[in-house]
Image (cartoon, rainbow, N blue to C red):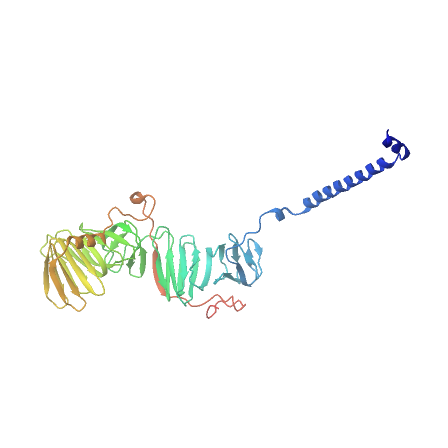
Length: 434
């Protein structure tokens, strides 16, 4: 039996009708597919990219004054969000205020800067910065780095002016640390203003006529040379002159070679002033105000020759010797390894200290010794000043070319004026930051 055939003959249009319905459904599905493809091609390609970059904390323009403020070449309005890499340029009679989290940046007319994540690069112009909180705010210049910080409960504030190869920084509140490539930082305190230049070379003339005393032979940063009103970040081969004052930081040390061949090792947290060093006449006076120095002194041959190291407790007179001298707030300590030292106290008595002996003079003037010192005491004194083989920082070590020192000149009291953006006017100054 073939019932299906008979059914087909009786209803010749049944299955063709079903086939037509299936074909129509397929056509609809194809149409929807083509429409989806066409619609997707009309969607901007940017919608398929990753989510927009976001700064760690929002950076936005809290105030814009004037019509010549451009962000990446286009006009910017107050409230706009800024991202790392954005370039802000201000023309004449225009100012801008930027908010970096808790820190505020005021930009004066004719300023150009690049936004970074919670910091900025200053290309030129004039900024004032206020830091709220414990985290410092960094400003990078073409030849310097500046970190502005407050203290617990104290706002940090600084003013920066950059034009060409010269920069000027005023610490209005808190502290501001200035650093150049390869140099230890120099700290400005509130009320101090400093000027410095790119690639500046150390001055060779001072108030004493520029007499050369020696040079820095080896170095562990941080060490600073104070010369008149200049504050120079010391480098290997930095020249030293009469009346120069060397100051080392918490980790800093310096090996000094004087013109007569004497060798001095300056320990950390120490201050040594070169009052006089005439190698030919053999007349030398140094002043150890604080800290520790190890000295291997060239033997004197002239009857009238002298080599003295002044301390708050008295004067150490040397003929030719190896010694360690330490000055603290409580006492002055002298250890003699070779030769002998005559120490004259402030009250007048002179004490001869031979090799292998030490004395300690309290701030009240009491003298303990001379007495023997233990070998361990000698090793400790040596280790606190030793920098054998050390050179200035840099990948090439001793073979590295010395970099130009950063010379910082204190020029007066820090400016406490603002840029005038917060009042929404074009006034050149404001009395204070908001």
